[in-house]
Length: 478
Image 1: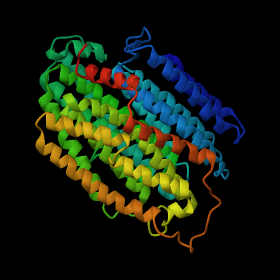
Image 2 (image 1 turned 30 degrees about the horizontal axis):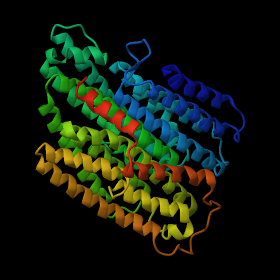
Image 3 (image 1 turned 180 degrees about the vertical axis):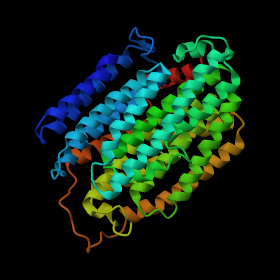
C-alpha cells in the first residue's frame, strides 16, 4: 500500500511530463487523486501501525491523520485544477500538473517515514516540487515569491538537518548506537544526552517551524500564498504545513518520552502565541485578501503549536485541528482564487460586492471566514474549543486568556477585509473577465465546506477513534 501511495503519484507525474495534450493532461490529477483516496481508505481500514516490512516506512496514527487530510484535500483540489486550467490556456500546464502530482507522492512519503533522515529528504523534496507551482503565473512578483520561498525554506531545512544530526549524536553521546529511526529513539529516549536533545529540539523547531510558517520564520508565506494560484495556495496551506507539523510531532514525541515536557512546552507555547500575535497585527488593515490568508495560516500554525505545547487534554483538539484547518483553507484559497480571477485584482481597493458578482464563490468565501475564525457550528470551532479546554484543564489560565485575545484580534482584522470583499455593490469601472463560477471550480469548494460543517456537528466514530489513537501514540501509551 505504501508503494502505491508514494510511487503511483510519482509515476503519474512522469506521465504528465510526456503527455502532449494540454486538455488531457489535467485529468491525470483527479484520476490519480481517486486512486490515492481509495488506497488511503483501504490502509486506514487495516488499523493502526500499518507497516511495509521496512523499518523506515510505517504509517502510525498521526501519520494516518495527515495522510487522510492531504489525500482528501488533493482530491478536491484536483477537480478544481481541471476547471482552473481551462481558463489558463494561454500557457502550457505540463510543469504544473507534473509538479502537483509529484507533490502528492513526496507528502505521502513524509507521512510514512519513520526514519528522521528520510523524512527530511521528503520534506525538502516537497519544497523543490512546489517552487515551480508558485511561479506558474510567470510575473515579476511570482518569481520574487518563488526565490523567497526557496531561500527562506532552504535555510529552515538546513537547520532541520543540523537538528537531525544533533538528535543522532544525542544517542551516540550517551553511549548508544547512533540511530534516526523513530522506534529506536523512543526506546532509548530516557538515556539520550539532554543538552544535545535540547539543542536538537530548538533547531528542529526553527527548521520545521519555517516550513510550517511559524513567526518569525513566516516571511515566505505572504509572498508565496499571494502570488501562487489559489489551488497551489490550498495545497501549501493544507499539505506542506501539515507535513512539517507531522515532522515536529515526531521530535515532540521523542522529547516527551525523554521526560522533557517542561522544556518543549515553554518553547512551543511561546512560539505558538507569538505566531498568533504576529498574524493578528498584520491582518488589521490588510488590503490584499490573498496575503490575508497567508497570515491566517501563520495564526493556525501557531494554534497547532499552542495545542502541542499544552499537551495532554489538548492533543485531541490539536490533531482534529490538522483536519479542520486543512479543509477550511481549501474553501478559502479556492474561493479567493475565483474572486481574484474574476476581478483581476487581490486588493480591496478594487474588489467589492463579490457576493453580488460571484454569488457562489463570494458566499463560500464568507462562510470560510466564519469557519476559520472559530465560529460555530464549523469544525475549527470544535478543535479550537478543545485546545482551550485543555489549557484550562492544565491550569494554564494565562495561555488560555492570550489564546482567546489573539483569536478576537484575528476575527476583527480578518473580518474587516472579508466583509469589504463580499459586501456592497460590485464596482462598475472594472473590466469584467470571462470567468464565471462553474461546476469544476465551484463543486469542490462546496464539498469542502460541507465537510468542515460536518466536523463541527458530528465527528464520525471511525475518525474519533483515529484521533484517539493518535493522542495515545503521542503520549507513548499502548
